[in-house]
Length: 246
Image: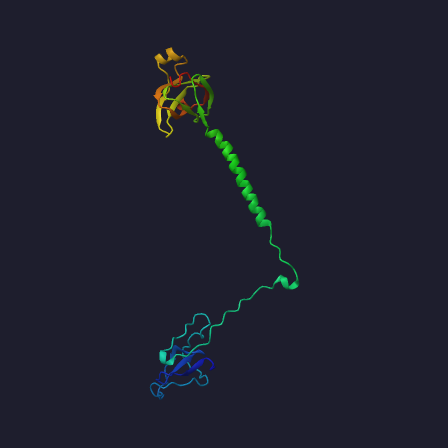
């Protein structure tokens, strides 16, 4: 194999062309003044390397060095290159050569199990806490009563299941608490609301003028009773159902 270097240009012209050790590159040096060019079409085998003339701009290093792209020769001057060789990859020394057996660390597995256990415990805690905020459905009948507590700017809810007919919700406050009652259907749509009961309701059901009372004909189904405080106040009291399905 001829070493890389500057050789007489096989394309003619009297100049020199860089031979990269495998094929001719696209980098050339023009011939010096008065040089006699070789006959056109002459293909010259690369002789010994000829140093470039003074002041010549050298091309980048041959392929394999950074920033160099080899010239693709024409079909008539193609030179078959050597078969590609798989690159050598340095391998770290193996502990098996010294007879030591590698052990898989268990820290990652233990950490993963700990995370799974923590998520499971957290899910149980959230489910238990969520049970307080999202009560179950109570099957309500006439005469039932519940105690309630409303935080400041908060609300108290009770999900009830009732038969078709008249539904009366009597909400009373304690210690001057002014409750506001609302009734929503199972889709979350508010169907009734009351702050202060009327004179007729006072005469029929009793209570105070600032207590709430809802009277409504409803189809059988599931409903939500929502109690808040007037102007966002907090307090406590009782909610009862004197008439259910009457």
